[in-house]
Amino acid sequence: QVHLVESGGGLVQTGSSLRLSCAASGGIISFRAMGWFRQAPGKEREFVAASGWSGGVTYSDSVKGRFTMSRDNAKNMVHLQMNMLRPEDAAVYYCAADKSLRRTGTAIDGQYDYWGQGTQVTVSS
Image 1 (tube, helix red, strand yellow):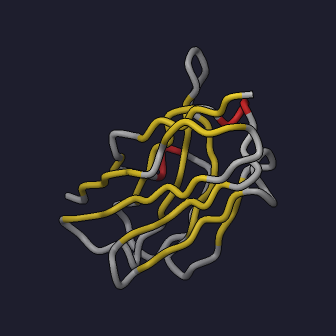
Image 2: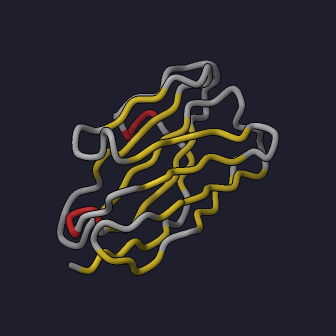
């Protein structure tokens, strides 16, 4: 069982940056696909970014060029660097981990078996 804890959310102004972190325990992430998803009030959860076990990263069109997902396998953590934040980026951001090993990270939330509790990101205009 992999336990995930997100941190780094907060209230920022439009155009600002935030760095989210996700710390994993109970299992190593180095051979797992990891994902970031977000959910705004009244909306469905949506894909943000995913990293496959080998390190390749894919992004949603809405964040491509502004957000960067990275891994720190030595610390068993993943990060999401968010730049040029917009009001529409406001949401609860969730980190997710694949139970299976050595898979490509995808935008399909059903791929991920372990989820964190989320961290709130608020962007003021």
